[in-house]
Amino acid sequence: MANLGNPQETIAVLQKYQFNFQKKFGQNFLIDMHVLEKIMDAAGVGSEDCVLEIGPGIGTMTQMLAERAAKVIAVEIDNNLIPILQDTLSAYDNVKIIHNDILKLDLGKLVEEENGGKPIKVVANLPYYITTPIIMGLFEAEVPLDSITVMVQKEVADRMKSGPGNKDYGALSLAVQYYSDPVIAANVPPNCFIPRPNVGSAVIVLHRHQTPAVSVNNEKMMFRLIRASFNQRRKTLVNGLNNAPDIPFSKEQITEALEQMGLKANIRGEALTLEQFAELTNILEQ
Ligand code: SAM
Image (cartoon, rainbow, N blue to C red; front, side):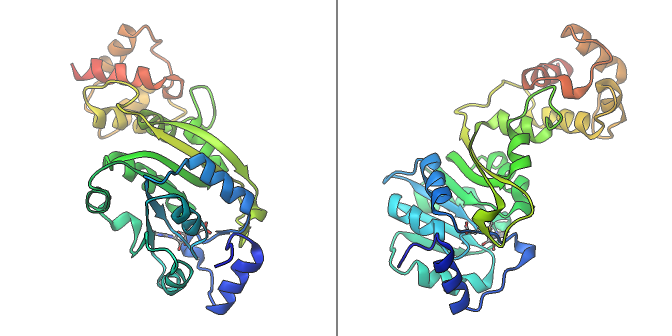
């Protein structure tokens, strides 16, 4: 099978199957070999690796992964793509196609069954409408994994990498950085896809930390505090947390904790680092 990663081959496959793109599934297929090679390099997939690909489309990246990895598990939601994948991937006996919604699968169980519970690598050109639930789902469910290498909306990649003082710093930045070290590997313009998305894209690699970046005695509470403080960005941290229904601490307790940390009472949540959110949680939970 010729390289699918060029426009002519992709169009030939789409025509052969009279495939219609479904917007609701975030279908923007990659048609640029340079970008595909960059993703392969960034993911660093080797012959021992088991790779989970989310949304293989017509199998362009799946073929490249199958050439490099021990095993590829490709999860695709769209019925109409399954016969295409069976065709484009027929030469590979190390690929397993799963027809399902990635958000409905028990990925811990899948890794247990397919890789004996050993860490996998996730590689994908993600459907942008569910980027955050996919990534947070992988981390929060503690799916054994080494790294996640994904194409996402440029703006989302920037948010993942951002720190205090930047306008795109928020709950996603803190969650991603708690679990991993994010590195942007490439910026990708719309003309590398068919159809063209109306936003810029970027490839980001999330190298999973062996242990989370900070030590906190109640992880769930820390993320509640983080979400509550960014829900009301314009408010001071004390008021933001005080207004949040799921935060059980009084204004006085929060003010006192900030004082103990040497922070001003009128500080905003967006000024706090991950370490400071962890410290605040540990003090409040005492
Ligand atoms: N990997 C292909 C490529 O790079 O050309 C396609 C990428 S396209 C951006 C996203 C893919 O994810 C589509 O094939 C789409 O059908 C699939 N998809 C969308 N929602 C999904 C879901 N919930 N579970 C699994 N796959 C999904």
